[in-house]
Image (cartoon, rainbow, N blue to C red; front, side, top):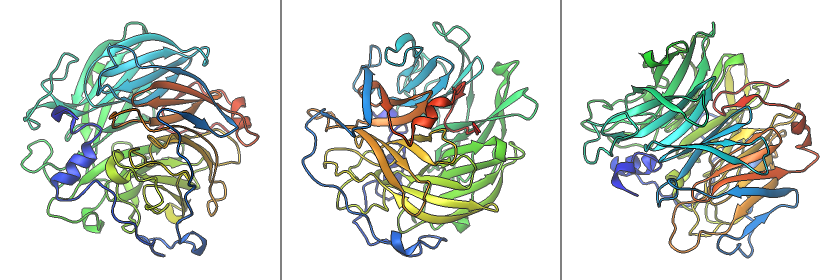
Length: 481
Protein backbone atom coordinates (compact mmCIF):
# COMPACT_ATOMS: atom_id res chain seq x y z
CA UNK A 1 0.00 0.00 0.00
CA UNK A 2 1.21 3.49 -0.70
CA UNK A 3 2.26 5.43 2.34
CA UNK A 4 -0.35 8.11 1.75
CA UNK A 5 -3.08 5.52 2.11
CA UNK A 6 -1.86 3.86 5.29
CA UNK A 7 -4.65 5.65 7.12
CA UNK A 8 -7.27 4.43 4.64
CA UNK A 9 -8.19 0.75 4.43
CA UNK A 10 -5.16 -0.22 6.51
CA UNK A 11 -5.78 2.39 9.22
CA UNK A 12 -6.44 -0.21 11.85
CA UNK A 13 -3.41 -2.28 10.98
CA UNK A 14 -1.11 0.74 10.77
CA UNK A 15 -2.29 2.20 14.04
CA UNK A 16 -2.12 -1.11 15.85
CA UNK A 17 1.47 -1.53 14.70
CA UNK A 18 2.27 2.03 15.77
CA UNK A 19 0.94 1.39 19.24
CA UNK A 20 2.97 -1.75 19.75
CA UNK A 21 0.13 -4.16 18.97
CA UNK A 22 -0.29 -6.49 16.04
CA UNK A 23 -2.95 -6.60 13.35
CA UNK A 24 -2.34 -10.27 12.72
CA UNK A 25 -4.65 -12.81 14.32
CA UNK A 26 -3.62 -14.06 17.72
CA UNK A 27 -2.99 -17.78 18.23
CA UNK A 28 -6.21 -19.72 18.49
CA UNK A 29 -7.50 -20.02 22.03
CA UNK A 30 -10.43 -21.75 23.62
CA UNK A 31 -13.34 -19.30 24.04
CA UNK A 32 -14.17 -18.21 27.56
CA UNK A 33 -17.56 -18.73 29.16
CA UNK A 34 -17.56 -15.11 30.29
CA UNK A 35 -16.28 -12.82 27.53
CA UNK A 36 -16.31 -9.23 28.73
CA UNK A 37 -19.37 -8.43 30.78
CA UNK A 38 -21.73 -11.03 29.34
CA UNK A 39 -22.41 -14.67 30.05
CA UNK A 40 -22.17 -16.97 27.06
CA UNK A 41 -24.66 -19.81 26.61
CA UNK A 42 -23.10 -23.23 27.17
CA UNK A 43 -24.02 -24.53 23.72
CA UNK A 44 -21.92 -21.76 22.14
CA UNK A 45 -18.78 -22.18 24.21
CA UNK A 46 -16.77 -24.11 21.62
CA UNK A 47 -15.95 -23.17 18.05
CA UNK A 48 -18.09 -24.85 15.41
CA UNK A 49 -16.22 -27.00 12.88
CA UNK A 50 -15.05 -25.32 9.71
CA UNK A 51 -16.03 -27.02 6.48
CA UNK A 52 -12.96 -28.32 4.73
CA UNK A 53 -12.42 -29.60 1.22
CA UNK A 54 -10.97 -28.51 -2.09
CA UNK A 55 -10.86 -24.73 -2.27
CA UNK A 56 -12.06 -23.06 -5.46
CA UNK A 57 -9.33 -22.27 -7.96
CA UNK A 58 -8.10 -18.71 -8.58
CA UNK A 59 -11.09 -16.48 -9.35
CA UNK A 60 -13.34 -19.53 -9.65
CA UNK A 61 -16.93 -18.71 -8.66
CA UNK A 62 -18.84 -20.91 -6.25
CA UNK A 63 -22.23 -20.43 -4.64
CA UNK A 64 -25.01 -22.27 -2.90
CA UNK A 65 -27.84 -23.56 -5.10
CA UNK A 66 -30.14 -20.71 -4.04
CA UNK A 67 -27.68 -17.94 -4.96
CA UNK A 68 -26.88 -16.70 -8.48
CA UNK A 69 -24.40 -14.14 -9.78
CA UNK A 70 -26.63 -12.04 -12.04
CA UNK A 71 -23.92 -9.80 -13.45
CA UNK A 72 -20.56 -8.23 -12.75
CA UNK A 73 -19.56 -4.72 -13.81
CA UNK A 74 -15.74 -4.70 -13.87
CA UNK A 75 -13.78 -1.77 -12.51
CA UNK A 76 -13.41 0.89 -15.19
CA UNK A 77 -10.83 3.63 -15.71
CA UNK A 78 -9.93 5.73 -13.84
CA UNK A 79 -10.83 3.28 -11.05
CA UNK A 80 -8.80 0.36 -12.34
CA UNK A 81 -5.41 1.13 -10.77
CA UNK A 82 -3.58 -1.17 -8.33
CA UNK A 83 -5.05 0.61 -5.30
CA UNK A 84 -8.35 1.80 -6.76
CA UNK A 85 -10.19 -0.28 -4.22
CA UNK A 86 -13.99 -0.47 -4.19
CA UNK A 87 -15.50 0.40 -0.81
CA UNK A 88 -19.00 1.14 0.50
CA UNK A 89 -22.41 1.46 -1.19
CA UNK A 90 -25.52 3.60 -0.84
CA UNK A 91 -28.81 3.57 -2.76
CA UNK A 92 -31.45 6.04 -3.81
CA UNK A 93 -34.35 5.25 -6.11
CA UNK A 94 -32.96 3.65 -9.25
CA UNK A 95 -29.36 4.59 -8.45
CA UNK A 96 -26.51 2.86 -6.66
CA UNK A 97 -23.51 4.84 -5.43
CA UNK A 98 -20.24 2.98 -4.96
CA UNK A 99 -17.26 4.43 -3.15
CA UNK A 100 -13.68 3.88 -4.24
CA UNK A 101 -10.34 4.99 -2.83
CA UNK A 102 -10.10 7.19 -5.93
CA UNK A 103 -13.63 8.65 -5.87
CA UNK A 104 -17.12 7.28 -6.51
CA UNK A 105 -19.33 5.88 -9.27
CA UNK A 106 -23.05 6.40 -9.90
CA UNK A 107 -24.87 3.43 -11.47
CA UNK A 108 -28.37 3.34 -12.92
CA UNK A 109 -29.83 0.05 -11.65
CA UNK A 110 -33.28 0.38 -13.23
CA UNK A 111 -32.52 -3.06 -14.65
CA UNK A 112 -30.41 -4.70 -11.92
CA UNK A 113 -29.21 -7.27 -14.46
CA UNK A 114 -27.75 -4.52 -16.64
CA UNK A 115 -26.36 -1.67 -14.47
CA UNK A 116 -25.37 1.40 -16.46
CA UNK A 117 -22.55 3.70 -15.42
CA UNK A 118 -23.98 7.22 -15.19
CA UNK A 119 -20.88 9.02 -13.92
CA UNK A 120 -17.52 8.54 -12.26
CA UNK A 121 -16.04 11.24 -10.05
CA UNK A 122 -12.28 11.20 -9.61
CA UNK A 123 -11.68 12.46 -6.08
CA UNK A 124 -8.95 10.47 -4.29
CA UNK A 125 -9.05 9.93 -0.53
CA UNK A 126 -9.39 6.70 1.43
CA UNK A 127 -11.86 5.27 2.15
CA UNK A 128 -14.46 7.39 0.41
CA UNK A 129 -17.24 5.63 2.30
CA UNK A 130 -20.44 7.03 0.84
CA UNK A 131 -23.95 8.00 1.90
CA UNK A 132 -26.73 9.94 0.17
CA UNK A 133 -29.62 12.11 1.33
CA UNK A 134 -31.87 14.05 -1.03
CA UNK A 135 -29.61 15.80 -3.52
CA UNK A 136 -26.50 15.47 -1.33
CA UNK A 137 -23.75 12.87 -1.27
CA UNK A 138 -21.19 12.56 1.51
CA UNK A 139 -17.74 10.94 1.44
CA UNK A 140 -15.60 10.01 4.44
CA UNK A 141 -11.88 10.74 4.07
CA UNK A 142 -9.49 9.12 6.53
CA UNK A 143 -6.37 9.84 4.53
CA UNK A 144 -4.40 13.10 5.02
CA UNK A 145 -4.52 15.19 1.83
CA UNK A 146 -2.77 18.41 0.84
CA UNK A 147 -6.17 20.15 0.83
CA UNK A 148 -9.86 19.34 0.83
CA UNK A 149 -10.43 19.43 -2.94
CA UNK A 150 -10.57 16.57 -5.43
CA UNK A 151 -7.33 17.86 -6.93
CA UNK A 152 -5.44 17.37 -3.67
CA UNK A 153 -2.30 15.29 -3.32
CA UNK A 154 -1.37 12.83 -0.58
CA UNK A 155 0.10 14.58 2.45
CA UNK A 156 3.07 12.23 2.61
CA UNK A 157 4.98 12.45 5.87
CA UNK A 158 2.85 15.34 7.11
CA UNK A 159 -0.28 13.70 8.55
CA UNK A 160 -0.73 16.44 11.10
CA UNK A 161 -0.69 19.15 8.44
CA UNK A 162 -2.96 17.47 5.93
CA UNK A 163 -6.72 17.76 5.51
CA UNK A 164 -9.13 14.89 6.19
CA UNK A 165 -12.81 14.77 7.05
CA UNK A 166 -16.04 14.79 5.01
CA UNK A 167 -16.58 15.99 1.44
CA UNK A 168 -20.04 17.04 0.25
CA UNK A 169 -21.38 16.81 -3.32
CA UNK A 170 -24.57 17.95 -5.03
CA UNK A 171 -25.99 15.01 -6.99
CA UNK A 172 -29.05 16.74 -8.44
CA UNK A 173 -27.61 15.91 -11.86
CA UNK A 174 -26.42 12.31 -11.49
CA UNK A 175 -24.38 12.62 -14.66
CA UNK A 176 -22.49 15.63 -13.31
CA UNK A 177 -22.10 15.58 -9.50
CA UNK A 178 -20.73 18.87 -8.18
CA UNK A 179 -18.36 19.38 -5.28
CA UNK A 180 -20.02 21.66 -2.70
CA UNK A 181 -17.93 21.88 0.42
CA UNK A 182 -16.01 19.96 3.03
CA UNK A 183 -15.69 19.71 6.81
CA UNK A 184 -12.42 18.84 8.52
CA UNK A 185 -12.87 16.44 11.43
CA UNK A 186 -10.39 15.47 14.13
CA UNK A 187 -8.53 12.25 13.16
CA UNK A 188 -10.38 12.29 9.85
CA UNK A 189 -13.55 10.35 9.03
CA UNK A 190 -13.14 6.61 8.55
CA UNK A 191 -16.92 6.16 8.34
CA UNK A 192 -19.91 8.38 8.99
CA UNK A 193 -23.53 7.94 10.01
CA UNK A 194 -26.48 10.12 8.98
CA UNK A 195 -29.11 11.11 11.55
CA UNK A 196 -31.96 13.38 10.40
CA UNK A 197 -32.81 16.41 12.49
CA UNK A 198 -36.21 16.44 14.17
CA UNK A 199 -37.61 19.25 11.99
CA UNK A 200 -36.10 18.15 8.69
CA UNK A 201 -34.05 21.31 8.32
CA UNK A 202 -30.68 19.82 9.21
CA UNK A 203 -28.90 16.52 8.92
CA UNK A 204 -26.33 15.30 11.40
CA UNK A 205 -23.32 13.20 10.51
CA UNK A 206 -21.46 11.20 13.13
CA UNK A 207 -17.84 11.01 11.89
CA UNK A 208 -16.02 7.98 13.31
CA UNK A 209 -12.28 7.54 13.10
CA UNK A 210 -9.41 5.74 14.81
CA UNK A 211 -6.78 7.46 16.89
CA UNK A 212 -4.94 8.90 18.68
CA UNK A 213 -1.66 9.73 16.97
CA UNK A 214 1.33 10.53 19.16
CA UNK A 215 2.41 14.16 18.84
CA UNK A 216 -0.58 15.07 16.71
CA UNK A 217 -2.22 18.46 17.02
CA UNK A 218 -5.50 17.38 15.42
CA UNK A 219 -5.67 13.79 16.71
CA UNK A 220 -4.02 13.97 20.11
CA UNK A 221 -4.64 11.42 22.87
CA UNK A 222 -6.93 10.53 24.43
CA UNK A 223 -9.36 9.94 21.58
CA UNK A 224 -12.66 8.75 23.04
CA UNK A 225 -14.83 10.97 20.87
CA UNK A 226 -16.69 11.31 17.61
CA UNK A 227 -17.29 14.46 15.59
CA UNK A 228 -20.88 15.61 15.06
CA UNK A 229 -21.25 17.53 11.78
CA UNK A 230 -24.37 19.65 11.26
CA UNK A 231 -25.48 19.95 7.63
CA UNK A 232 -28.03 22.74 6.95
CA UNK A 233 -30.01 21.16 4.12
CA UNK A 234 -30.83 24.54 2.64
CA UNK A 235 -27.18 25.62 2.61
CA UNK A 236 -24.85 22.60 2.87
CA UNK A 237 -21.82 24.80 2.23
CA UNK A 238 -22.28 26.02 5.83
CA UNK A 239 -21.84 22.53 7.29
CA UNK A 240 -19.66 22.45 10.39
CA UNK A 241 -18.63 20.44 13.43
CA UNK A 242 -21.01 21.35 16.27
CA UNK A 243 -19.92 18.85 18.94
CA UNK A 244 -17.30 16.26 19.84
CA UNK A 245 -19.05 14.10 22.43
CA UNK A 246 -17.27 11.37 24.34
CA UNK A 247 -18.95 8.10 23.44
CA UNK A 248 -17.09 5.65 25.63
CA UNK A 249 -15.06 5.70 28.81
CA UNK A 250 -11.44 4.65 28.35
CA UNK A 251 -11.19 3.89 32.07
CA UNK A 252 -13.83 1.18 31.63
CA UNK A 253 -12.13 -0.28 28.59
CA UNK A 254 -9.65 -3.10 29.02
CA UNK A 255 -8.74 -2.59 25.36
CA UNK A 256 -5.52 -3.78 23.77
CA UNK A 257 -3.15 -2.42 26.41
CA UNK A 258 -0.07 -0.32 25.72
CA UNK A 259 0.87 3.27 26.46
CA UNK A 260 -0.97 4.71 23.46
CA UNK A 261 -4.11 2.62 23.12
CA UNK A 262 -6.04 2.62 19.86
CA UNK A 263 -9.32 4.39 20.48
CA UNK A 264 -12.12 6.22 18.75
CA UNK A 265 -14.96 4.48 16.91
CA UNK A 266 -14.81 2.59 13.66
CA UNK A 267 -18.50 2.66 12.87
CA UNK A 268 -21.83 3.74 14.39
CA UNK A 269 -25.23 2.51 13.23
CA UNK A 270 -28.22 4.68 14.11
CA UNK A 271 -31.86 3.65 14.41
CA UNK A 272 -33.53 7.09 14.65
CA UNK A 273 -37.08 5.67 15.06
CA UNK A 274 -35.91 3.99 18.25
CA UNK A 275 -33.68 6.91 19.36
CA UNK A 276 -30.85 4.38 19.54
CA UNK A 277 -27.42 3.88 18.03
CA UNK A 278 -24.88 1.10 18.39
CA UNK A 279 -21.23 1.97 18.13
CA UNK A 280 -18.33 -0.31 17.28
CA UNK A 281 -15.51 1.48 19.04
CA UNK A 282 -11.99 0.11 19.14
CA UNK A 283 -11.91 -2.32 22.07
CA UNK A 284 -15.55 -1.81 23.02
CA UNK A 285 -19.14 -1.78 21.86
CA UNK A 286 -21.47 0.97 23.00
CA UNK A 287 -25.23 1.51 23.07
CA UNK A 288 -26.26 5.14 22.69
CA UNK A 289 -29.39 7.19 23.29
CA UNK A 290 -29.57 9.65 20.37
CA UNK A 291 -32.77 11.46 21.36
CA UNK A 292 -30.63 14.58 21.09
CA UNK A 293 -28.31 13.82 18.13
CA UNK A 294 -25.85 16.51 19.21
CA UNK A 295 -25.58 15.02 22.69
CA UNK A 296 -25.59 11.23 22.39
CA UNK A 297 -25.76 9.54 25.78
CA UNK A 298 -24.04 6.26 26.59
CA UNK A 299 -26.50 3.66 27.87
CA UNK A 300 -24.04 0.78 28.06
CA UNK A 301 -20.44 -0.04 27.25
CA UNK A 302 -19.47 -3.67 26.64
CA UNK A 303 -16.24 -5.52 25.94
CA UNK A 304 -15.18 -9.00 24.91
CA UNK A 305 -11.44 -9.34 25.49
CA UNK A 306 -11.44 -13.09 24.92
CA UNK A 307 -12.88 -13.09 21.41
CA UNK A 308 -13.15 -9.62 19.89
CA UNK A 309 -10.14 -7.74 18.57
CA UNK A 310 -11.44 -4.80 16.48
CA UNK A 311 -15.11 -3.89 16.96
CA UNK A 312 -15.98 -2.99 13.40
CA UNK A 313 -19.71 -2.42 12.85
CA UNK A 314 -23.20 -3.00 14.24
CA UNK A 315 -26.64 -3.95 12.91
CA UNK A 316 -29.99 -3.84 14.72
CA UNK A 317 -32.72 -6.31 13.88
CA UNK A 318 -36.04 -4.75 12.86
CA UNK A 319 -37.63 -4.42 16.29
CA UNK A 320 -34.32 -3.49 17.94
CA UNK A 321 -34.42 -6.51 20.22
CA UNK A 322 -31.01 -7.66 18.96
CA UNK A 323 -27.74 -6.12 17.84
CA UNK A 324 -25.09 -7.87 15.76
CA UNK A 325 -21.56 -6.56 16.33
CA UNK A 326 -18.73 -7.61 14.00
CA UNK A 327 -15.05 -8.20 14.75
CA UNK A 328 -12.53 -7.28 12.04
CA UNK A 329 -9.71 -9.42 13.42
CA UNK A 330 -6.54 -8.69 11.48
CA UNK A 331 -7.76 -5.32 10.22
CA UNK A 332 -9.16 -6.75 6.99
CA UNK A 333 -5.81 -7.80 5.59
CA UNK A 334 -5.35 -11.18 7.24
CA UNK A 335 -6.56 -14.72 6.59
CA UNK A 336 -8.69 -15.51 9.63
CA UNK A 337 -11.34 -17.80 8.09
CA UNK A 338 -9.44 -21.02 8.64
CA UNK A 339 -9.62 -24.05 10.91
CA UNK A 340 -6.90 -22.60 13.15
CA UNK A 341 -8.99 -19.56 14.06
CA UNK A 342 -12.01 -20.25 16.31
CA UNK A 343 -15.45 -19.33 15.02
CA UNK A 344 -15.73 -16.84 17.88
CA UNK A 345 -12.86 -14.74 16.49
CA UNK A 346 -13.15 -12.51 13.43
CA UNK A 347 -16.87 -13.22 13.63
CA UNK A 348 -20.27 -11.76 14.45
CA UNK A 349 -21.52 -11.54 18.03
CA UNK A 350 -25.28 -11.56 18.56
CA UNK A 351 -26.56 -9.56 21.53
CA UNK A 352 -30.07 -9.46 22.92
CA UNK A 353 -31.29 -5.92 23.62
CA UNK A 354 -33.88 -5.37 26.32
CA UNK A 355 -34.57 -2.35 28.53
CA UNK A 356 -31.54 -0.58 27.01
CA UNK A 357 -29.21 -3.41 28.05
CA UNK A 358 -27.18 -5.71 25.82
CA UNK A 359 -26.59 -9.36 26.71
CA UNK A 360 -24.33 -11.62 24.67
CA UNK A 361 -26.08 -14.59 23.10
CA UNK A 362 -23.69 -16.27 20.67
CA UNK A 363 -21.43 -16.01 17.64
CA UNK A 364 -21.61 -16.67 13.90
CA UNK A 365 -18.84 -17.08 11.36
CA UNK A 366 -18.85 -18.44 7.81
CA UNK A 367 -18.25 -22.19 7.90
CA UNK A 368 -16.17 -22.50 4.71
CA UNK A 369 -12.42 -22.94 4.94
CA UNK A 370 -10.47 -20.19 3.17
CA UNK A 371 -6.87 -20.40 2.05
CA UNK A 372 -3.94 -18.71 3.77
CA UNK A 373 -3.65 -16.25 0.89
CA UNK A 374 -7.22 -14.95 1.25
CA UNK A 375 -7.89 -11.98 3.51
CA UNK A 376 -11.15 -12.96 5.19
CA UNK A 377 -13.02 -11.63 8.20
CA UNK A 378 -16.47 -10.28 9.11
CA UNK A 379 -17.20 -7.02 7.27
CA UNK A 380 -20.09 -4.86 6.04
CA UNK A 381 -23.61 -6.25 5.71
CA UNK A 382 -27.28 -5.37 6.04
CA UNK A 383 -30.57 -6.71 7.30
CA UNK A 384 -33.08 -8.04 4.76
CA UNK A 385 -36.57 -6.50 5.18
CA UNK A 386 -38.46 -9.64 6.27
CA UNK A 387 -41.17 -9.33 8.90
CA UNK A 388 -40.66 -11.66 11.84
CA UNK A 389 -37.26 -12.91 10.63
CA UNK A 390 -33.71 -11.77 11.35
CA UNK A 391 -31.70 -12.43 8.20
CA UNK A 392 -28.57 -10.60 7.05
CA UNK A 393 -26.38 -10.53 3.99
CA UNK A 394 -22.76 -9.81 4.78
CA UNK A 395 -19.39 -9.30 3.08
CA UNK A 396 -16.40 -11.36 4.22
CA UNK A 397 -13.71 -9.95 1.88
CA UNK A 398 -12.26 -12.98 0.01
CA UNK A 399 -14.62 -15.20 2.00
CA UNK A 400 -17.27 -13.80 -0.36
CA UNK A 401 -20.77 -12.98 0.81
CA UNK A 402 -22.93 -14.89 3.26
CA UNK A 403 -26.69 -14.83 3.82
CA UNK A 404 -27.36 -15.97 7.38
CA UNK A 405 -30.31 -16.30 9.75
CA UNK A 406 -30.10 -15.26 13.40
CA UNK A 407 -33.82 -15.38 14.18
CA UNK A 408 -32.85 -18.05 16.71
CA UNK A 409 -29.88 -16.23 18.21
CA UNK A 410 -28.72 -19.40 19.98
CA UNK A 411 -28.43 -21.23 16.66
CA UNK A 412 -27.52 -18.83 13.84
CA UNK A 413 -27.08 -20.52 10.47
CA UNK A 414 -25.94 -19.73 6.97
CA UNK A 415 -28.63 -20.15 4.32
CA UNK A 416 -26.72 -19.09 1.22
CA UNK A 417 -23.33 -17.91 -0.03
CA UNK A 418 -21.32 -16.64 -2.98
CA UNK A 419 -17.54 -16.57 -3.27
CA UNK A 420 -14.60 -16.48 -5.64
CA UNK A 421 -11.39 -18.43 -5.28
CA UNK A 422 -8.11 -16.69 -4.37
CA UNK A 423 -7.02 -13.79 -6.52
CA UNK A 424 -4.69 -14.68 -9.34
CA UNK A 425 -0.99 -14.05 -8.93
CA UNK A 426 0.30 -11.68 -6.27
CA UNK A 427 -2.83 -9.52 -6.20
CA UNK A 428 -3.04 -9.27 -2.41
CA UNK A 429 -6.08 -7.52 -0.94
CA UNK A 430 -9.45 -8.38 -2.43
CA UNK A 431 -12.98 -9.66 -2.01
CA UNK A 432 -16.32 -8.16 -1.06
CA UNK A 433 -16.02 -4.96 0.98
CA UNK A 434 -19.77 -4.40 1.36
CA UNK A 435 -22.76 -6.58 0.49
CA UNK A 436 -26.25 -5.07 0.90
CA UNK A 437 -29.78 -6.08 -0.05
CA UNK A 438 -31.79 -3.53 -2.04
CA UNK A 439 -35.11 -4.10 -3.82
CA UNK A 440 -34.81 -7.76 -4.65
CA UNK A 441 -31.06 -8.08 -5.24
CA UNK A 442 -27.79 -8.18 -3.33
CA UNK A 443 -25.21 -5.64 -4.43
CA UNK A 444 -21.60 -6.36 -3.56
CA UNK A 445 -18.78 -3.86 -3.90
CA UNK A 446 -15.75 -6.01 -4.64
CA UNK A 447 -12.41 -4.40 -3.84
CA UNK A 448 -10.84 -5.36 -7.18
CA UNK A 449 -13.60 -6.92 -9.30
CA UNK A 450 -16.08 -4.04 -9.44
CA UNK A 451 -19.81 -4.32 -8.78
CA UNK A 452 -21.48 -7.72 -8.38
CA UNK A 453 -25.25 -8.09 -8.56
CA UNK A 454 -26.48 -11.28 -6.91
CA UNK A 455 -29.89 -12.90 -6.57
CA UNK A 456 -31.05 -15.20 -3.81
CA UNK A 457 -34.12 -17.35 -4.34
CA UNK A 458 -35.15 -19.01 -1.12
CA UNK A 459 -38.47 -19.34 0.78
CA UNK A 460 -36.85 -17.68 3.79
CA UNK A 461 -35.76 -14.57 1.89
CA UNK A 462 -38.45 -14.30 -0.82
CA UNK A 463 -40.75 -12.10 1.36
CA UNK A 464 -38.15 -9.33 1.15
CA UNK A 465 -38.94 -8.96 -2.55
CA UNK A 466 -42.34 -7.50 -1.62
CA UNK A 467 -40.73 -4.53 0.13
CA UNK A 468 -39.87 -1.44 -1.92
CA UNK A 469 -37.02 0.61 -0.47
CA UNK A 470 -36.94 4.22 -1.67
CA UNK A 471 -33.36 4.65 -0.54
CA UNK A 472 -30.87 2.86 1.65
CA UNK A 473 -27.90 3.94 3.74
CA UNK A 474 -26.89 0.96 5.84
CA UNK A 475 -25.72 2.97 8.85
CA UNK A 476 -29.11 4.67 9.19
CA UNK A 477 -31.61 1.92 9.84
CA UNK A 478 -35.39 2.12 9.57
CA UNK A 479 -38.32 -0.26 9.93
CA UNK A 480 -40.31 -1.26 6.85
CA UNK A 481 -43.19 -2.74 8.85
